[in-house]
Length: 168
Image (tube, rainbow, N blue to C red; front, top):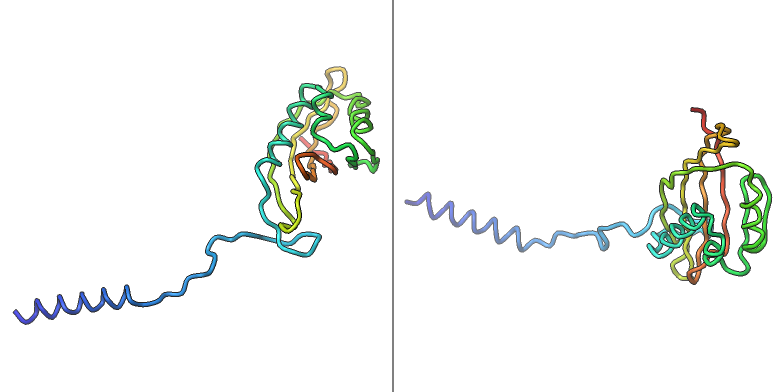
């Protein structure tokens, strides 16, 4: 009989010790930032609303609805293309799109928003596209495009892209 109370006392003591210990936990166990930005601070996830704007741009572009496409950009938006050409204003940007002589089909592969400075408004959205271009129904090139959109107050004020030719 001595054994049973001893076991019960031991188990109860261990239980009280375990719940009575103050085990330190990190102040924020879920990381809120990762990496660093050109501004020198940490990078945080941006808003889903900014990603939705980029999805809208993609939809309008795919449908060649240039009027709707224009609604996603600020009046003073700037655009830098992978080939080194720059354009001021959405009309110039749309002009560049319309000058393209290739037929492009693409898969919108990813998009995510980051906030380089949570003290100020604005998100960057990074998007990736797998693009196949043809001319007169003949394959011309296969490329990855990466695009960056700076979005503030629901409008893109800066856009640039990069292009990498893929070998099939």
